[in-house]
Length: 380
Image (cartoon, rainbow, N blue to C red; front, side, top):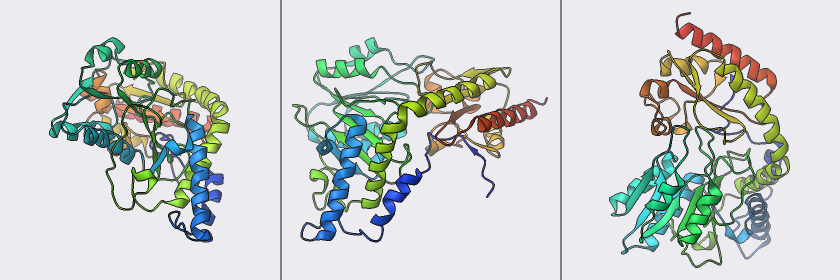
């Protein structure tokens, strides 16, 4: 196939060649069940899982025993939120999150509300930033969790995580962060975090494998299991472990730890080139603040119909209007709505996210195509 230029790395990333190479033996030659404790096939797989657990822990500054494998970040988030609610079952419960969170968080919080929990959805300003004073004022005596993402998946905006960590610690509240877009892209640390969701396919690992970091040696409770049947993963998440994917996740984490800083600098230069070229078009606007991931830009194009814009651009440049879950929905992004964009401009916004295979030529070709499309749609 003659694929378009890929600028949708926030949706997913291709497996790095070394990741694929590391995974291959675990599909055939080393096929043992990591839970088989009585023979060498199981021991070899278990050792591979533990090595990967260590590699992933190193990426986020955790201990290996604090990494719990899941099928992805959505499951990790559900385990963290619903498992915490179950721990406090019978008590009055209040949760704090934000209007611009991923649907995995927002839908999980809605599920808690249906079971009687109170949830505060913090607003953001026109740059996607929360008010820390409002966050502090929202804390109630029965607040059980603050749940705020590290970096937004649609705009790349980075929350003031250190200040949020401190607020949670001062008030003895569980802090859960969706670090899916941040892990492997910028340096992050679990210090001050109680629960963290990450996934492999956003950092050049395989799909279908993620992890929940669960802080040990702390007085605040851990979430209760949501999947039962065998007591795998220290009882947090039962089910036969996906050893090939776990090995790939570990290898991807190891690679990102070594390449992250250099790659981030390269992508920032390319992102800035792309962004400056696009913002030179008439009636275009940047969605988000300057404090964001270095590989992401979200641009609003005035004077065009959003669905037509996205479909036409994607003929030659693979991009999205926001989360991959709703990438071509006629509805405007909930993130951009929360930032105050009107529906028409929200629908006519495109997220461009660059990655390890992006070249300067890709950027220039993308700019030329977008300029052509926007000109045609504006009738010029």
